[in-house]
Amino acid sequence: MKIFKEVFSWIIPIAIGLVVGFGIKQFVISADFVDGDSMQPNLQNKQMVVSLRTAKIHRNSVIVFNAHGEDPQATSKDYYVKRVIGLPGDTVRSHDGNIYVNHTKLYQGYISADQRTSGTGDWNLKSLSSHWVGDKQVTKIPKDKYFVLGDHRSISDDSRYWGFVDKDKIQGVTKAFPFQKKSHQINQAYKIGN
Image (cartoon, rainbow, N blue to C red; front, side, top):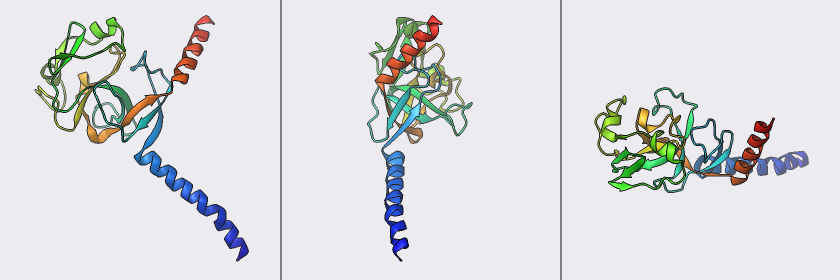
C-alpha cells in the first residue's frame, strides 16, 4: 500500500501538469516556427513565433492558420503565417503601391516601397476572385473570413492567389521573439562573410 501511495504521489502531479499544458496549448497559446521567406523582413525563416488564440484580430495583425482548404496546394499539416489586410465586410484594393481598405489607405511602413509597388501589384477583390476556386466575383470580404498577404509580397503565396482565410482556420495572432530575429541577423551576417 505504501508503494502504491508513493507512485500516485508523483504520477498525479505529472498527469495534472500534462492536462494543464495541453489545455493551455489547445485553448490559449502555442509556439510555431516560421518556415520560408514570405514574411521577410519582419519574420525570418526558422524564427519562433507565439500564437495567442484569444487575441482579437485587427488589420495588420499577423496570424497563423491552417492553410488546408484555403490554399489548394496545402496539406492538412500546412500552417501559414500571414498579415491580415482585410476584415469581414471590408473592401480591399491595391493601386500604385498603396492598399486601400474601405477607400482608406492602409499603413504599410513595415515593408519596402518595392514590395508595396511591384511586389503587390494593382488589383481589387473582384479582379482577384475571378481566378479563385471559390468566392467568385466578390467585392467585399464575407462574414467570418479574412484577406491576408505576406510581407515579402513578390514571393508570398497568399489571398491574392487562393482567396480568403476562414475564421475557424486561424490558430491565433502571433507575437515574435525579437531576440531571435537579432540572432538570426547575426548568423546571416556571419554566413555572408564566409
